Length: 171
Image (cartoon, rainbow, N blue to C red; front, side, top):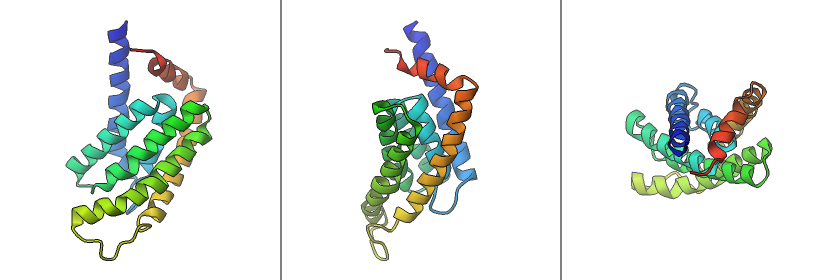
């Protein structure tokens, strides 16, 4: 039973990673990755903070390696997924997951992107601490609002409860 549960978790996690890696570049606006925020919020609600963060980290790495996306793929997504999952765990409310995504991606991720990009590009010329903030907030908010609609739909068809039961079991 434990092995079956672990396989189910890894299967769902792999599907979420695949969705993020494929959909993020298709629905990307320069400097924004709203689909990443969509999947961060869905993962927060369905998978929880640990698996949501693993998903975001893996997606960021794959997008960097396969698609040439800069290191912003990690700084933007990981904190949003973690906070969205933690906020939702504190009180299961979709709007708390949205708030976590907004704070994690829109604020923390954007602010941490400045020093990361300054180190990787070797220059901070033309950049400042809030350089990425408007785009990250735009992506986080638009993606989160889309996620609210998607989560309501998967809840309506009964998939959300099934996913939550798989990820609430202890290993």
